[in-house]
Picture 1 (tube, rainbow, N blue to C red):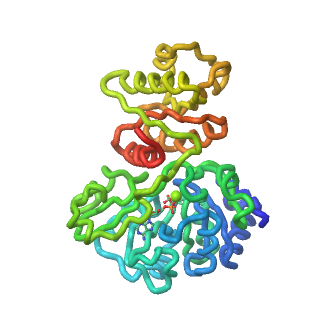
Picture 2 (cartoon, rainbow, N blue to C red; picture 1 turned 135 degrees about the vertical axis):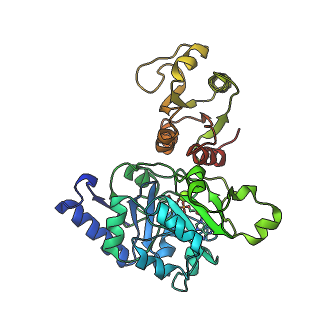
Picture 3 (cartoon, rainbow, N blue to C red; picture 1 turned 60 degrees about the vertical axis):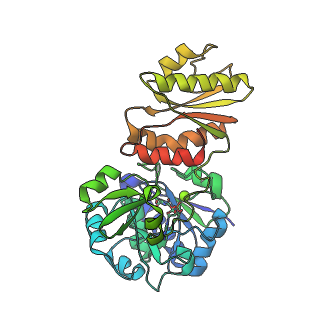
Length: 367
Ligand code: TXA
Ligand code: MG
């Protein structure tokens, strides 16, 4: 299969080339094809959510197991009504506060949604994306679009069209290229039940933001008791290794001032001595400490530390978790491409969007 590249200029969506690209992508979706497109979080691989044959192509292209349900993307309230049976009062409050945006709500599905989309579950994940290209595409297609992240199953999510092509070139009909995504980690998946918000997957809408809007408590699904889990919706796929680079991912944490830098450098030195080709996700501000702690000198020319085997990705400022989130997947992919055998990465604090970054890293690697 030939994968078409359709370029969109986000700064000029009304321009002729952008309009033509979006019209073509919408046409492919309506005809039952697959199109990768940008959202504010990561690129999604879309197909008409109401067409079981089209949705099956997503699973095939990604090599995704049938038990892992897809998120349905909607452009407006009319599409919401197509895919859900009803909306609970508290879910309405969250929609008002966070849509369009990176929040996925688990809602009772309508009969129009094929079983394949929800993996047979009673609830369907729905979100209204905020990205202007995603919005234009949904409007032009006129149908709700089922879209998981546009990567091979278990691999790193894509934050630009090049990443999508790395994983899916020749396996999908088109890639709508709208540049880099702005947020970088996926939406927050939430179920509202009995006035309480349960987070199935931490994401870019933070726990703190949900607290401000939810009437009841906000809890992570992982913190529910056995009894409560019986009543909650299932969480398929949450336990499996995911978001993973090809290299082994080693996570480090540190205590006290400079603790994390020390832990990181000890690990780098140890792995290098063991003959590994080491990659480091190095937050800004870590470099001075890392260099002081390093046994061999660093070569500061470029990103790659020249004559030694340590490859350094300049991540983002440690105090700016939004930037760490935005560059997380690009960094892991960059180090993979450099051919490292192991990646050493510090774990951000579980605060704000740091909780989501931490969640992805914990599922991709080990401490
Ligand atoms: O930001 C995002 O959410 C991106 C963009 C493309 O919208 N999408 C995304 O989809 O990350 P995906 O398929 O990679 O992850 C969706 C996850 C599933 O693996 C599952 O854990 C959960 O969301 N999910 C989806 N539908 C569900 C359902 N009906 N019940 C429980 N969990 C569900
Ligand atoms: Mg995914």
